[in-house]
Figure 1 (tube, rainbow over the protein chains, first blue to last red):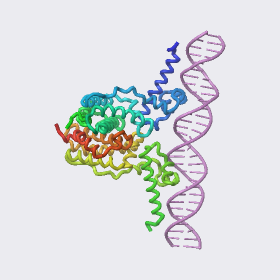
Figure 2 (figure 1 turned 90 degrees about the vertical axis):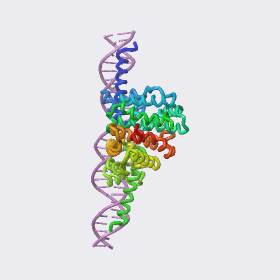
Figure 3 (figure 1 turned 90 degrees about the horizontal axis):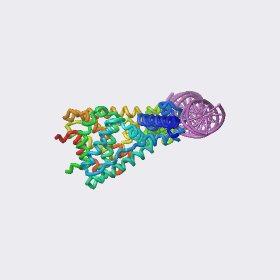
Figure 4 (figure 1 turned 45 degrees about the vertical axis):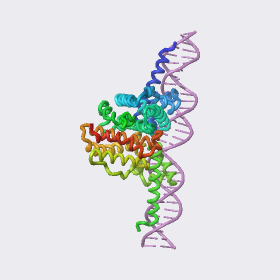
Length: 186
Length: 186
DNA sequence: AGCCTCAGTCAACACCTGTAGAATGACCCG
DNA sequence: CGGGTCATTCTACAGGTGTTGACTGAGGCT
């Protein structure tokens, strides 16, 4: 009854559309990605995309929904290491949904809101672990820095950063992150 | 002969168009900025914008042309301090042309190319000052970091970063930058 | 004064976009 | 096997975009 080939195929095409949308949003950003292009990539009619997702906006929201990893917490040392771990992961495999969000954040309000919220949550957890009166600012700088690195690697593709070994990047960045988390106190 | 009121008024309107274009490109990015909007802000007919600048593309190039500050150089210590100085400046007054470029870099190829070139020049000068075999990677990370901070402050407007005192930001960032320039060698 | 240059405007074009709704046709159930 | 459900497509529209070229009228030169 439930898993008739009809329902199955429906889920398949829906997933295919969503995957292609993710890719295109990540490659071109919100504005330059057209429903028609998504449909074409998914070998499907544009109308079907609308039928399933209602609007380009809703498609974007669904496509960029990320089952995000757990928020950091613990001591300053621990937080620093968790952040580096997570960065390592973002550097190794390309998190398409996040990249789509990042690429669109400067031109699409919805993406900006999403990034801002995500950054806020992160920041709160980080600043709680930092024993400093400027904890909030430090946490914000940490977010900005990490965003900058991921951006530079996957989207801007800065020379020598785009194709560098993640391990090396992490090693170089460790003192930097530790100084921001104040894990190394003066 | 040369400075007839005709020629003068022409230069005025050209400058006004360019200024409004800069602002709009910085606020909305390339795609969301329309020639019509620029014209309206400059209280001018859209056709005139085309007449003076030929195309939206050329208008963008002109608007984002930045008489950029001198490239860094010297010892690792000196480079670190120069970068912090320049960052301080970017944090204090909003460099509209650069912000326009930054906001558009993720969606507009021309902006991306420009940023990439600029970053490349920067990186070369920086990496030359760093006595390390990973100098290139370190320089790239430095660029990524600084881009991230400026982005986070002016465009994403991260909490606690958007309205922080530049001095404090610089102070917090100094150890971070010095660790990247390897000014503090192990 | 008279002409002509030129800053600036107007109307229109061709195109592309998101979106809506009717039409189609294959598949499943009774 | 017949009928209806439902995934999918087709056609169309309304608005916005960059861009064009003809037009206008005030300013300055002779």
